[in-house]
Image (cartoon, rainbow, N blue to C red; front, side, top):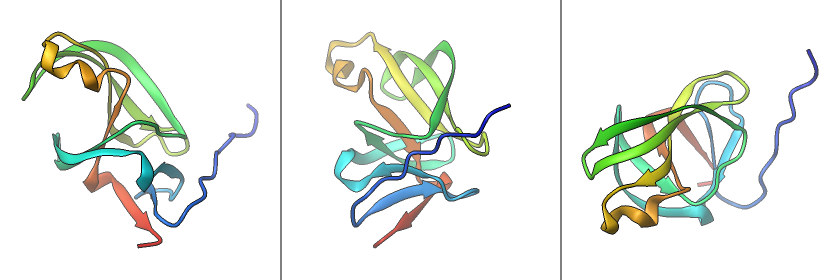
Amino acid sequence: MGRLFVETLSGPKIFKCKCCKVDFASHDDIVSKDFQGRFGRAYLFRNVVNVSLGPIEERELISGLHTVNDIYCSSCQQILGWRYEKAYEPSQKYKEGMYILEKERMLKEGW
């Protein structure tokens, strides 16, 4: 087994894993703070780092049917949210390729 490559983000406001404190996302990549996850409020991000993808599955969410992958911290394997692979409703297509990170699973640094 090799060393784990962990990307470090720069900037004044960074989101980190609540369990192991690995960087996940920059405040600049937030698309919306008005989302609901499994454990409460969640944020929609354009880009995230230091995550691994679970298997693709179809899931019925509040906004309709989507094809998603769960995302996990690449360091501690904590589930963090999911990635939108495909949206079936035309009004939801903007989410494709974006990530939901659950607020309950993150720490804020630099706030």
